[in-house]
Length: 96
Image (cartoon, rainbow, N blue to C red; front, side, top):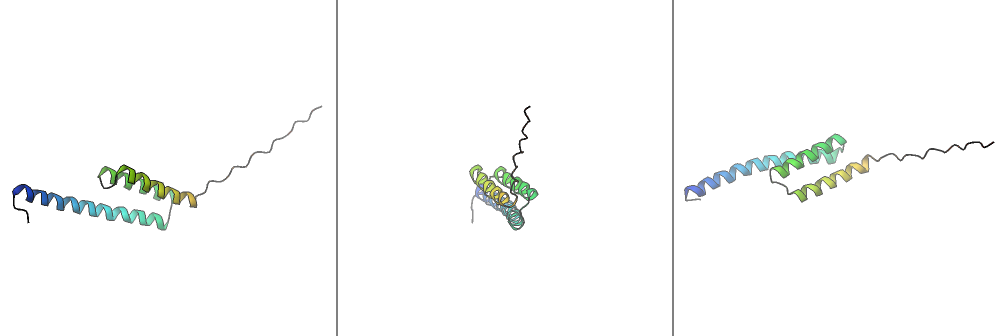
């Protein structure tokens, strides 16, 4: 147990921050899990938003956030493949 006043305050602060961080991490894991279960473009926006908030709250580093975003964007790319455009057939002009 902390003895000095500053140590007691530090313990209270640490406990308060721990509760906030744990609740945020639970919310973040739920959003990520929902996205993995059913990947959608809207879900990807939510993933980006929650990961950016994690960086803002110093739960993730910028590099970790970038890796997470890249990982989840690859998952959506597999499902939503871009249609390949066919080249328009060229019409030849008749020369007279």
